[in-house]
Amino acid sequence: MMVAEAASGFHFSLFMSHRAMKKRIEPREGGLAVRRNLPAHERKQVLLDAALNIFAQKGMGITVQELADRVMVTQPLVHRYFPAKTDLIAAIMDVLHNAHWDPQWKQMLTDRSQPLEERIVTFYRSYLPQIHNERWYRGFLFASLENPEFARSFIARMDEELFSVLIAETRNNFGFPSTRENPASEREIELVWGMHSTSVYVGVRRHVYHLEVSADIDTTIHDQVRAYLMIAPVVMRELMPSA
Image 1 (cartoon, rainbow, N blue to C red):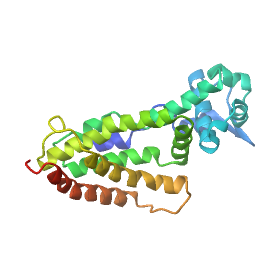
Image 2: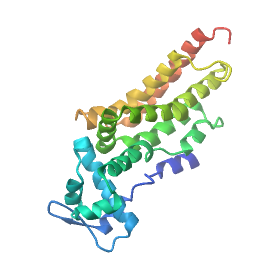
Image 3: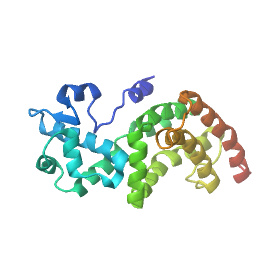
Image 4: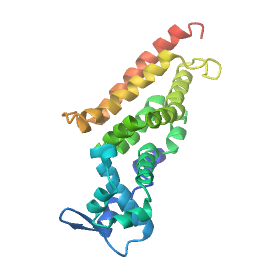
């Protein structure tokens, strides 16, 4: 219960809450005007928040002038917080890479006092709401196309903090040797990718392809987790028949 509560209360550490933002931004025709008395760190966050929205639509086509116009400030003010466009892009990519991830998830996934299916479902219930929005999906694709290293770094983190953990916990759950004794195989990695990709791709269909998708993401999560846990021991038995 405590994990679920912590997960449900998790917000982007780099983002202000919508309510707080409304108090500090004055809407005007054609953009958002930042109040003059806004603290510097909050002003920077407003600029970054607007930049993420523009980046999701235009990718590297974003300009400092466009950002200034969107927030109704001068271009020199934007440069005070982001001296060059490269600084702005670096800040955007940092948010796309890190802001949605909760370090507590790994601890939750390895808590063997809870059933494995429950742990995996709880993770995806917490993780997917953090990325299921147009800004993250489109922004991530633009960032990956511009800089392939961005995607490789992201996947390396997912492999270390999620996929390898899921394989290790699945082996333990079904009584197979640990990944320390017997490293994860390609088939096991592909199984985890299959479960993960199906749930994540729902967002691509909705926010990139603009297709109608099921609003019942919870059922989609349950179905994919159950399918994974049904086939995983079969594959592991084929890979490690003596276990």
